[in-house]
Amino acid sequence: MNGHQHHFGDTTSIAGSSKAHPALNGSNVHEQVPDDVDVQMAEERLHADHTVSHLYESGYLHGNFSDITVHVGTAVYRLHALILSRSPYLVHLMSTSPYKDMIYIPIEQYPDVTLEAMAIALGYLYSYQAIKMVSTANARATLASGCLLGGMDDLCAKAYNICKDSIRVDTIEDWLAWTDAHFSPPSSSIPPSTPGGSGGTAAGAHIVGASALNGHSPSTSAPSTPRSPSSPSPLSSAGQQQQDRQIVAPSIFGPYAQLLRDDVLEFLIVALPAILMTDSNTTTSTLTTSNGHQNGGESVKSEINGEALEALLRVFSRVSFDVFKTAMESPKFFIGSDHDRFRFAKAAIAKRKQFAGRGAEESVVLAVGEGRGNLHVSRKLRRKALWKVAK
Image: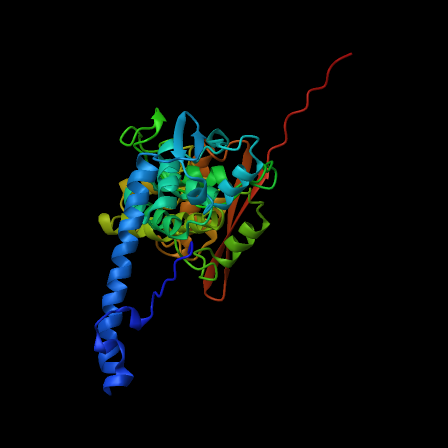
């Protein structure tokens, strides 16, 4: 306040207006006050917009009157400690840095974060307009950057929704690779945890070096809901139990990692077969094993044509076993009857021997009961051959 008295929200501050004193002129409060309130709110909003615009243009983009230098990889920003204090992660860096006016953000430790995304996240600390720079190409890196810095709920929600919408037929394999990289089986080691926040991609014109405003390229290093954590998961009960047994590595994406994984599985199990079935004509396709014989000596009457069926087999031959098991055991994975799903699983297992299923024996069993069949997929690692050394 610096010695000044402010009366924001006080109707008496509107000079010369009798409407500001409804009790004095006998007018009805509900009829008169809203006009003045609307005017005052509009004035306050205009003032706030001008202030934020000035902060973003002069402070962030041009680095005027900077009091701290921020190094991000090869990029250098001239920023303002007070604005940066909106981020819990940056507060930690500033309070522990050996230099009073300089900090370093080690993005090389976070493969999901890019220079472009970090620029967006830093710009978001100054103004909401940085959110306009989030796109399909940089949304995943932006989400990671926002989660890292923290305190960016709107930016993270925006980036997350764009990520969710980007899960399509042409991107599903990339998203499956991302899922495998961020969710480790029990035998996997768990990397150290990192400070959390949400991510974004942006650029600042005042950056000294390789990260000029238009000099960033979209993130391609990372394979690219908000849904409430209490919302139903797309997984079947068996798949959920498998997921519960799984050890999940700490992720820079925080709670969004699980949301995105659920979105990927939902698309893989429900949307992808439906899309392929819609785009294809109903035909009879024969699933064959890797040795050229038909599964069980029978042809599979599928509701998708041979090309679409082969596309599904190609996808499921390359996914991790946990994802494969979850999909095959889910009643939501609909490609016909339970027997059709069983035969598809057998064909996929045969194809997986060349890819994701190498080094293990995978099998599927159809348990029929109460008029409905339940699939159970299992996996057993092959024992390595032991060689006896002759003395």
